Amino acid sequence: MRSDAPGHHHDWLDDDAGPVVRPYTMTGGRVEPSAGRFDLVAYVVAGPPYEDGDDDPQPPPEHRAIISLAQQPITVADLAADLNLPVGVVRVLLGDLLGNGRISMYDPPTSRQFPDDDILKAVVNGLRAL
Amino acid sequence: MDSGLSDQETGKRRIPLALKILIAGGFGVGKTTLVGAVSEIRPLQTEEVLTDAGAGTDDLYGVEGKQTTTVAMDFGRITINEDLQVYLFGTPGQDRFWFLWDELAFGALGAVVLADTRRLADCFPSVDYFERRGIPFVVGVNCFDGAKRFGVEAVRSALDLDPDVPVVLCDARNRQSGKVVLVALVEHVAARRAERVAAT
Ligand SMILES: Nc1nc2c(ncn2[C@@H]2O[C@H](COP(=O)(O)OP(=O)(O)OP(=O)(O)O)[C@@H](O)[C@H]2O)c(=O)[nH]1
Ligand SMILES: [Mg+2]
Image 1: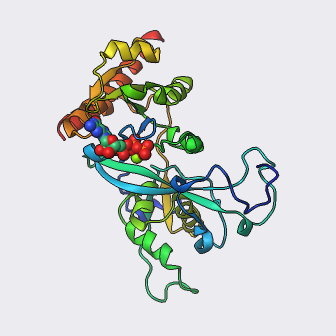
Image 2: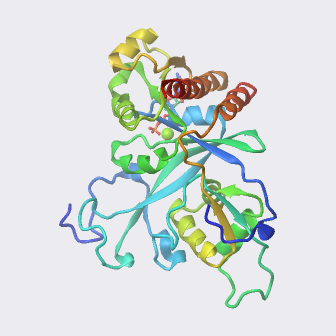
Image 3: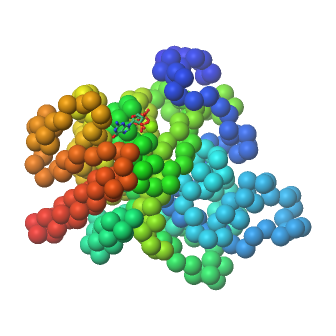
């Protein structure tokens, strides 16, 4: 498989793998965001929504959609599910918006102490109360 | 945090905490069913660029020559309160999607490994994966109709689990039962924390 030319049949793909698609048209072919890889549960918070005549050229509709969904903090995974777009595409779009200063990103805490006991207790109680 | 906006622009909004829990296990073991039973489930499309793993990764042929495949993943959210959300990610059952796991596992609180006693070996790779990475997990034995009931201890020894790993019998279709499994996981995580603190 190593020697396969790009675009050749990949024999590990079958019907379960879903269609082979090119969803990256709307990212101009880019597959990596310009600013790192965003965690699935990183939160996105947008600045003010676009206003008409705000930008020249007009922002693409996907940018507008993200800005409007992220008026409240929303995770990368929720955005992708809401927009019905693959996560990788959303990441590239977020990279652009971050570059434009349109959004902030908040990564989940990574310390070994996290989450602390109080949080774990809250989760247990919350789950029980479901 | 990487902030593109000033505090003024974001209005100093409180950012909730998001905890990640993975639901793993073999093909058809009930992962999607479990996520759907305890949360509002939605499909999440992830995708991978089909480059040959290991072959000169950063080679420069154009992106237009690359293909991607979408892989649908289960995705569920449980709102604990305004500031605390639990996210469930059902990992793709097929072995060839292992490459998705590392990203999912990064920073995860823990995992539920679902097991079907008729095909217990199917969950070995998941158990192995979480053990190696020191990610806390519980085993949920999904009690399919017609499956012979095995005791929790029989499953534990068949899987060669550490004695502290909880094994819980469950019915993935049942919300209460699913909650019990998740609670067992979070309590297990808390117990491991306590041990680590005691050890230092
Ligand atoms: N009797 C019984 N059936 C179950 C249980 N859990 C799941 N099922 C059934 O088993 C089948 C497979 O369940 P899924 O939830 O799709 O399994 P999965 O792990 O998501 O499968 P893949 O994503 O294909 O790996 C479905 O028809 C479920 O209705 C259970 O606890 N008891
Ligand atoms: Mg499934």
